[in-house]
Length: 382
Image (cartoon, rainbow, N blue to C red; front, side, top):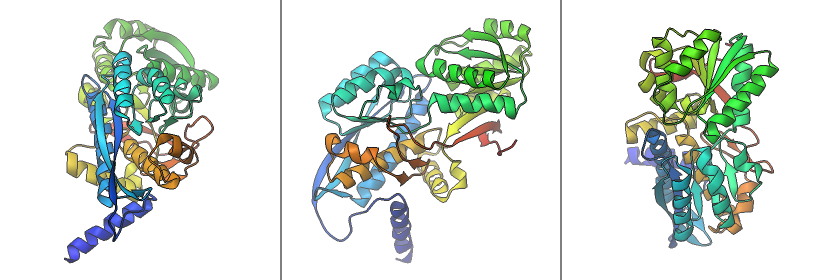
């Protein structure tokens, strides 16, 4: 019995820390609320999509167990998880399914190339979209129903350009991107910051998010002898690219955006993904906060894998939406959207406050390197 009491206390305190008020001691009529998730659940980026789904399921199960009340009814969240395959056309089909199903919010997508077109469709339908897609164009239209719950390319690329100059003392870099909205956007922002900090860009090359052979590009870059390469793209290409750099004897750093910042990068690149690879992640280091540690422990216990880059952001995303619904006393996006825009809430992956474009006001970024197949935070000043 005491163990059960301690378990209840722990869950209550964690919920209170997230600003959520559970239903205690009384019954209420139940109300089903559909929440959509769109992401790459198949294909080379499937691990990321599954990570997002896992984080969202954790939040949903916790909220349903707590039984939050909105407009006098106990809310029961239902997940509608859809595979957009990281493809814009498939993403539009998925988004229309969400509209037809009358979901009250959509978490995702992951890819900027999907987020940009579906943002118009979901906004016009009056459905809140909370995405980690980082291209600045996602929020530049100022759509009132579109929120970004992660860092932008401007923040990520600028951080890495400055890091290359200040921390790595690099003088020259080559840049490759995969021509996706995400890859091109984060590469462009890296170049701006690198040049502003005195780094010479000696080559600019392009590939695709389906490529597996980078020998020709890397051989060309090798002749320019840069201090490192910045890759704007995903881990599914970043890992093999790093391995091929090693095979070609191309020494130097490999830097990238948040899409290479997970253990899948190391699985694909094997021992070539080492301390010479650097990448950024938005938000604090999970292992350095009590809520982050608890989230990570529960995630690993339930799914038997480490959380990747944005599982915690999806967890937070539904929690802040639920809080906005409580504040507005409505689950309808038209009613709770303003409360979400004005929210101030601490989550596992950061503090959620939005500016007039509905980007995060404060998105601290941590730079990671790799050790023993895992991304590890680089101490400040190193």
